[in-house]
Image (cartoon, rainbow, N blue to C red; front, side, top):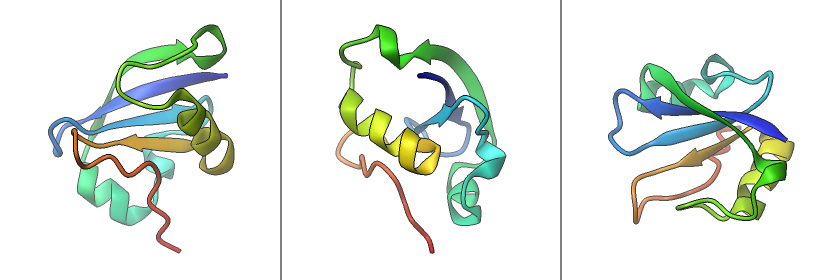
Amino acid sequence: MRCVVYRSNKKAGAYVYCKEGFSPSDLPDELQILLGLCEAVMTINLDEREKLAREDILKVRQNLNEHGYHLQMPPKESIGVINFG
């Protein structure tokens, strides 16, 4: 599974992993407001990795499959996915 990782330009330390074909403009409106503009910083293939530096790779894969994205907040704020409705 390939995904693009975006860095929030508004919320320091926040990153969004988006499944291929999903973009920050597809995020819920409330989340787009929180994150502001997002800049692509890398593309990764999760099938070629066993772990990620700060996130549980199984949780990331699950969120990508279920929602199309995974939200990585700064340490002590990580919440995975925000479901607004």
